[in-house]
Length: 523
Image 1 (tube, rainbow, N blue to C red):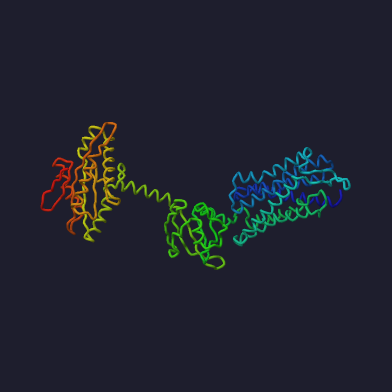
Image 2 (tube, rainbow, N blue to C red):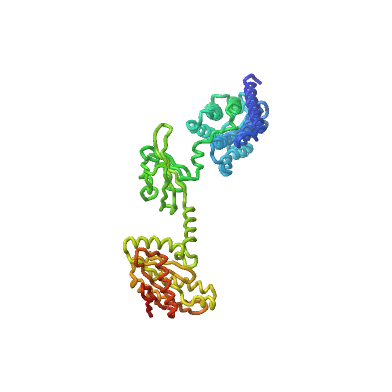
């Protein structure tokens, strides 16, 4: 064996020993490191296999032995490059799913199988034999189709890993940049060596890559001890940016779109990176079909708006932003408030709406009516209230049961709503009593409406499984007469009129008049 081959073997073994040391060292210290150490252990273990198998390919003398060690070599070589890519991706904060990992390792797995079975199909090597001129261990080989595919994939894996690290250089703090240097060189050294090999500038049949991997190993070793490669790793800015649940949009000083995160893209699907540099008002109009629903003046304040595109409610916070290059801009943070708003509506409905009839309850009535009554008095507008009571309701419950009684309540409400105008304040006052507040109605107008409601309900009997039930109501009507009178006093007048109507035989309307007995109106 000549001195050149001895040097090759020595360099391959040196690379193998250093990578084996790295693998074992990190493995023994794995509990003190971050999760990326696991991928690094696998990466260096495969490089170790690659280096030692390369050395044995040079040592053995028979073609069969060379083929066996070449297959073992491919176990390390074919998988170490994509595993190195996965290591870099996890280091930079990429989310690695099982599907991604399996997808990246499919081609290496195929390569190993095809190399092991090459004598059957010759897809990887069309010719693989001892060099007739140089003899063992030099190999004369002619590459096949899969060799090209494998080579492109391996070279691409290392190049992508290198470029990923390079693109994160600017956003990485200076204290972490030595780590990036080690990682970039760890990918760049085999890339350059493999390129030289493909150009035919190295001895035929001898792979020079494992002979230079000792340099990458020393860089990794230096980085582990000097810059805490696995103890502390810089999480990429975009990894944090895209992991935020809130949508984020960044604008420059001219209100042009310069960045948005994944959450924002989910909120507004038509948003595209091709829109970078466009005026944000045009972008918003294009992707949502509406003008910007918030104003720039409310910096550091929050605003809520509904997005018709997705039928959801968002809260936007706008704050001033100072860029690294000393330019100014705006940061827009969108929070999806739809579920909160739906919950608020549900709670409001429970608090202010009657569960059975779905109209206002007593609490909501007083809240709404007090305000309307004060406004009416302030403008000297007429204000009339009508108290209604379902006649003989207890008899209905006792005869037919509470389920039918509930149907009667709903039936009466529906009949009243059919006669009322939108916006008129109608509420369940309690039990079988209902109240109607009529702003702008005089006593006579309120009385006419009450009579109309009585007639409508009487003429619409309720059909139930228990039979047809004719329902009637009694009404008491009162009008606010002076500025000192409270809503409770007005309702008390209507209640007196209602009591008079019931005493007089029910199914009728009584109105309350000051200094005068309630007047009876029969149908």
